[in-house]
Amino acid sequence: MYARYHKPIRLTEFALVRFGTPKVYPSGRQQAAFRKAATAMLAGLRGVERHAWFALPATKDGGTGLFTAAGAPTAVGRAFQGLPRTAP
Image 1 (spheres, rainbow, N blue to C red):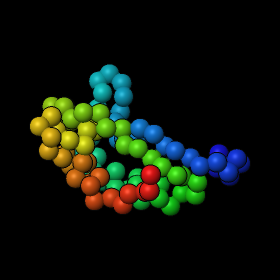
Image 2: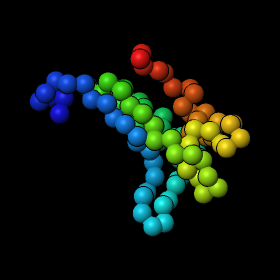
Image 3: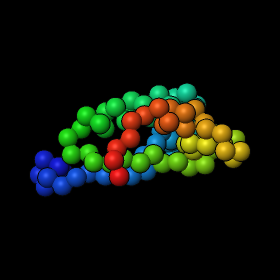
Image 4: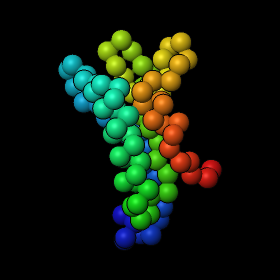
């Protein structure tokens, strides 16, 4: 899309989850590794202006939330804290 239209790309709500019945969430460690790798890849793609993590709340089954119900960062939340930010 960028090559054709030269418009900035904004990727919204991405995460590592298999939607279906049942919904499957990888471990927190896998989520964190995916978040770090995906962010590094997206930073190198021409035209990608912004991206946002799909932060479903953390549940007893896992989830992609950045924080627990008590407000503590999850494994992916801690990984997110260490990533560089883009300007608003």
